[in-house]
Image 1 (cartoon, one colour):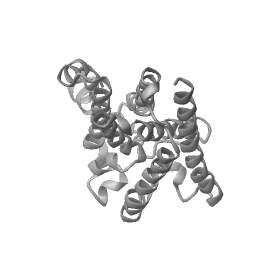
Image 2 (image 1 turned 120 degrees about the horizontal axis):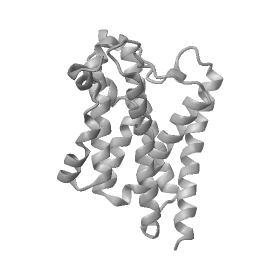
Image 3 (image 1 turned 180 degrees about the vertical axis):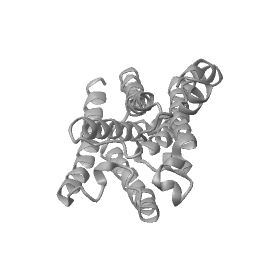
Image 4 (image 1 turned 90 degrees about the vertical axis):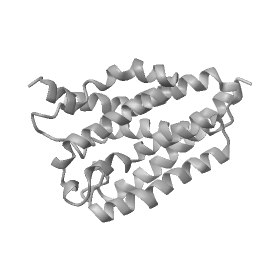
Length: 222
């Protein structure tokens, strides 16, 4: 099964672009952000037509609809404006905590999983883990290195919450109404209202916890 088409369609070559992209940008976080986004887009470019959503709209739109995808925007804001770090950190911590809790403890499965021989699902799972794990590692490293110059506050928690609410109201709801695509399996119709309310509460608890930990950590180092 391993041939040039298989390697190309599954994006096996993308990680090897790292040194070239880094040479051009001289920024590890921006480089990893771009390459992870390429992997996600590549998946839907080559296999999106196999998903139910493709009968309603162009599947290339899908990798821009998830909360995870707003993390790329938060990273860009932070790179061009370091004062945005606390909000970007909170968003990526939420993405990290939410994903791995859902996967490991709630039994969530990837709603876009395709069981076909031309799809390398092992590789797709690996880069999916990387999408949710690598950015927060960079943010934690940056916070340790620059903790004296970072300002977490009640306002950074508030704006982080606004960020999630804006995504939910203006991206998730319209996308779901228009396409019927649930994006996250744990938000499907077979999930009880009680569980969904717990998820909502968990989102804001995670944001508050992330902001509070950042606030205490940075304050203790001054």
